[in-house]
Length: 266
Image (cartoon, rainbow, N blue to C red; front, side, top):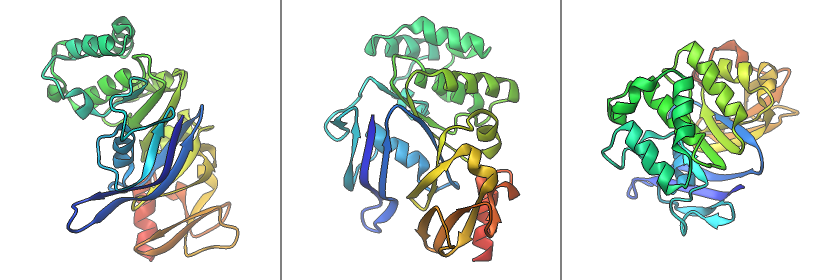
């Protein structure tokens, strides 16, 4: 179980740049997705859960433990490459190292890598891999190793359509909780229609939807009557409605396009 209460993360102590602004989020036996434009704080949110960034205010509880007090919780895993670059080893050696640390079966990871047909990465070091190969390696690690909570940052970045389908199947079959962040609506609608959906803009979180709602969701300037959720931004208040509104989420292929449209109208 993941419990995030009033989470605040700031970069640059002098300027006090707030990257995550009073985030509250709970995940219990679920798989959820967070979408938002680049720079909205999605990746930082995952890093906060992992204990990789300092928490200014609030708390993050994973399986009942505060991440400030417990490091390297073996039941939590991620596809973030920096987690696996801490040691200067080949992909194969990293797999066996983590399997030993987590008392897991390395063969499970090797089988998944074979299923995605990227066995060639095993002899390479992670930083030498292409973006797509790095994502595949990270995804496979996150979805294995006896993990009960997987944190997936843009899991389909740089991956071709055939392998996307295989990765999506692994994500669907994962026996645990998942927080996935992405900006790709087409992938979500194709593979993850029943997942809870959250929006993150300027470090603020809004929810109340499912992925299947995307074709019916509109973003609006200010608070529209009957809005489901809202976020206060530097542009003013943005609200989300169903079935009617100012900018439809399906009017662009991804979140970046939607945000460009709404910010252009503000």
